[in-house]
Length: 188
Image (cartoon, rainbow, N blue to C red; front, side, top):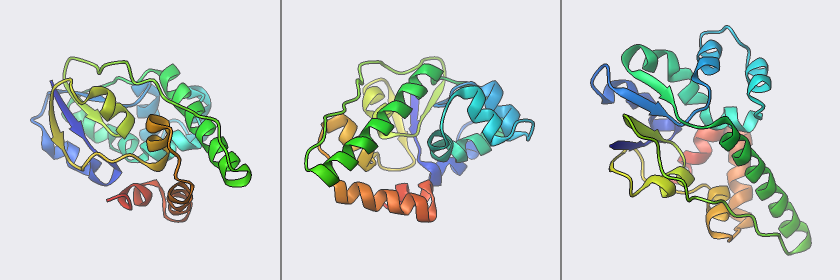
């Protein structure tokens, strides 16, 4: 198995990285709906309503979703993320935001942790675009790194239980001012 660690700024390398026709597994749920959206047959709001996910999901995966038409012409694309898992991740991010608020204004926060026990998918080249999945799959096979794996402040909190409020707020400020891609790039 080959695993590729990629962040939004490096996703554009994916179409030229592999030979045509290989199976490419993407960290997305419901490729069918995402392709409809990428081809303009579903609006962003319709897509998110059908998936039951938030703008945060879309913000984190926008580049990969935009590349789906190109990738699906070159490779046998499959989406390996389960929809319920994505919804659970959304809830975790919400709980992490609540914990930041509580710690910032009240000095103590409830601990929110993620379970990383599950292993990775099989049957092709697997793209991993976040640190939590990287930690979960890092011992599964051979890795190609398009970027050095680094956690966002939220992922660091979910994995370790340590919350750096200043780092989190700075990251969040960059997300809202310049976009998720720039915020992730600011980690490097």
